[in-house]
Length: 480
Ligand SMILES: Cc1cc2nc3c(=O)[nH]c(=O)nc-3n(C[C@H](O)[C@H](O)[C@H](O)COP(=O)(O)O)c2cc1C
Image 1 (cartoon, protein in one colour):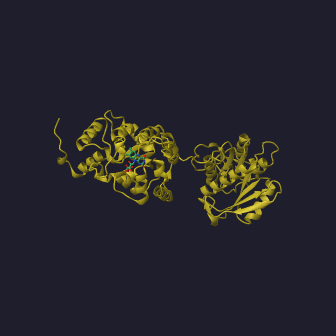
Image 2 (spheres, helix red, strand yellow):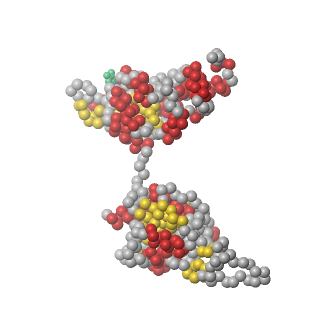
Image 3 (cartoon, protein in one colour):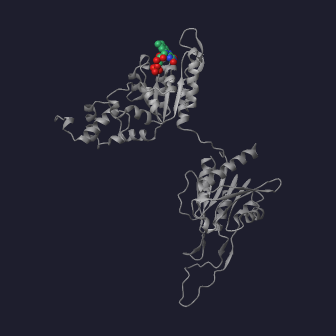
């Protein structure tokens, strides 16, 4: 094998290799070996693409590594110098079990209790210990450790480390990372009960809370010291892993879980002949946004959509229709539902004398007038159903004048519970646009009184979220 000296390489390549070596905690020579091995397995990987895990002696496929580094939440775990440091080794395992990528930093004190070797073996990753390490500081490693993660966990958080955090010290790797970070921080204090109840620690705890640091524990129980008990035990590794997981993957509240919602959206197309139709300018954006918001709120959503140029919202059951009559059939087939929202701009009329063949233009002859007839009124039909009427029926009123007056008349005439009224005069740009200015009219079921709530102009997504939140709070009240 030919001898290779890095000094003979181009400056940029040399820097790149040094950077990779420092990142992966390998000597430059070892890094070159890894690069050559990768190349022989199918092409070089750019340094920026590299997963932060060093390759183990038996390298896994790069696809798997990439997959993991792309989707796994990342934690920088700082182990402080307390007796509970041994439990931090278990914490590494518990976080990994939850699909969290863990990179470990040990304070000088921590290394008196557990070894960096054990931490790196458990995390499958180099463990970091030294602020002034020329290899990892080649590219300001402490800044990367502070920022290339989604969360920093400090466990155990000793009294000393908490004092440093509260006062902004940065004289070792752990405190420098904590000071240089813009990521959420979760600490698990662990110390003797007298240390915990000391006024200085109390001041530091209060300061850290003010600074937005999250805390888990300490728990009450027996101490490592003989015959001592009280508050100061580190929270159990599973509790800390769960708290970290909850911060990394917050659960979105699902107030409409278990509810079935039917939404209509878009225009309808009323055929004149096989190639021509009557339509309107509805884009379907508002109805689609509501479907999205309702799905996010946990509802089981059926979206009956007229012809639109929008992507189907994920997780929503979409039925595509063309005409008003098709839309009514699809709506009836979807019943029963808990809530029905009719956001579609259904054509009021359709052509009676629809051509079976394409209508032909005849020179000098005017077109035969189109004879129109009224389409079924979907909102009124569903609102007035004797059986299967959804408990909450919401209509939309798109008006170009006398908005509230017309919407009030419509809520009474159609028999629905709420009307979302908007001014669609061309000057507003609402029809087909991305924002909406909405008035919500609600009819009191007992008194029949109608209340009008005028919302500030907002995006169609925000209108959807606000409407869904209002529905959720009404449904909760009704079932309380
Ligand atoms: C055996 C032993 C156990 C210790 N346990 C704790 C502890 O549980 N909590 C704590 O705050 N300090 C404890 N200390 C003191 C810390 O090791 C010391 O304050 C150290 O400076 C902590 O700093 P570090 O977390 O930055 O390593 C212990 C010291 C010894 C010798």
